[in-house]
Amino acid sequence: MNPYYKDYSEYLRERFGEVKVQKLSVDAGFSCPNRDGTISRGGCIYCDNRSFTPSYCDPADGVARQLAEGKRFFARKYPQMKYLAYFQSFTGTHARALPALRALYEEAASQTDIVGLIIGTRPDALPDGVVDMLAELNRRLPVIVEIGAETSHDRTLSLVNRCHTWSDVAEAVKRLDNVGIESGLHLIAGLPGEDDDDVLTTVERALRLPVATLKLHQLQVVAGTPLYRMMERGEIAVNPYDLDSYLDLCVRVVERVRELRPDVALERFVAQAPPEMVVAPKWGIKNYQFVNLLHRRLSKS
Ligand code: SF4
Image (cartoon, rainbow, N blue to C red; front, top):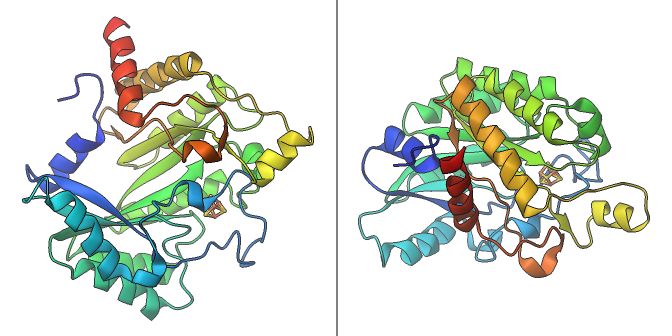
C-alpha cells in the first residue's frame, strides 16, 4: 500500500478486485490525425512513436496475436493474471471507419483473460459515434480512455504543434464522464517555455475535471524529432529537468493531488524511451527507481 498517494495498482484493485491485472500494449496500426493530414502533417514536435511503442508490438501480427504474446510473457510468472488490452500507439480511436474500429476493440475484448480495454487517444479524436460505441462496450467490460493533454496552456500546445486546445481536453473528459467512461490525462513537465508553476497550474486544472488518473512524465528530447532539430538550430529553448529538480516538482504535484483530489490515481512519473534515442535528459533511471526516490523524499516532507 502506497502511504503517500493513490497509485495505479490501487486504482486497478478498486476497479478489478484483488486479481492481478496487467496492461498489454497493442499496436493496431492506427495513424494519428496530427500526422496523416487529417488536421496536420507535422505531428507534435517531440513525438517519435518508436520511443513509446514496445518493440514487440507489430501491427502486422494483428490484435489477438500481440495479446497472446504479451500474455505468454507474464503468465509464466503469474498464471492467475488478467489483462487489459492497451491501444497505446499513435491515436487509438483514429480509424477510417467506425465498424473497423469496433472490430479491433471487439477482437481484443473477446480474447481469454482480457478484462478491460484502455484506449490512448487525442482529445479531438473522440467524435460522438466513437464515444457512443465506447459507452456500449463499457457496459460489457471496463473501458478506460487515456487522453494526451500534455499541458493546459494553449500557448504551449500551439508551440509544440499539438493542434488542439485545453478546452478540447476538458470537453472530451466531460463527454466521456457523461456516458460513464473513466478517463485519465497524460501530462508532460518541461515543455518549452514552461516552469514548475505552469506544470502545477496544469495539474490543478486537470484535477478540476472528472478524471480518474493522471500520468506525468518529463519531456524527453528524442534524436531526429522536430524538437531536436529546432533545438540544434537554436530556434527553441529547452531546459530539461535534472533529476533533483524533477523530484522536487513531483513532491509538489503529489501534495496538490492529496490536497485537491486524493481519489485521483497517479500512474507514473517517468518516461523511458530507449536510452540510445534520448538526447536529454539522460537520467538512466527507470520509473520504479524514480518512485523509490520520490517516496523517500515524500517521507521527509
Ligand atoms: S504525440 Fe500523439 S498526437 Fe502527437 S503526433 Fe505523436 S501520436 Fe500524434
